[in-house]
Picture 1 (cartoon, rainbow, N blue to C red):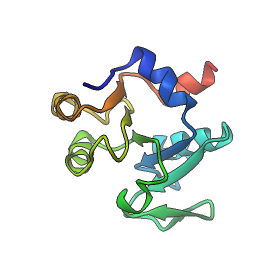
Picture 2 (cartoon, rainbow, N blue to C red):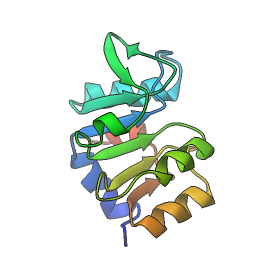
Picture 3 (cartoon, helix red, strand yellow):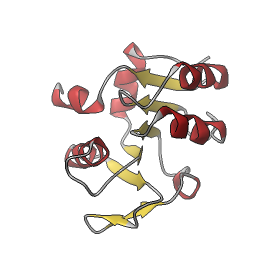
Length: 133
């Protein structure tokens, strides 16, 4: 069974290879802010969004599959329906850590994550957590 919040939050923040699902080139959007903040804190960050090819000159991926072997944590900054659909195809043997930004999860998402055994953080913003480090 996966771990939730608390201890897993620190484990995740110690991992350096992240994917941000919902990255945006719009600097006002949280997808951009999460992506940019992780990069500014020296994380290796892969952006995922089928709408964009690049953000600030860096390649953005249409889906998670091409980068799963490179990431340790996935941060979701999309609506719960998209989060759930993407999680259906994920397995903890690929990536065990999932961070759900506020608004990116609902009860169905959390139930699926628990049933699959992911280590998850929800109800907490990575921007706030990195600001406290």
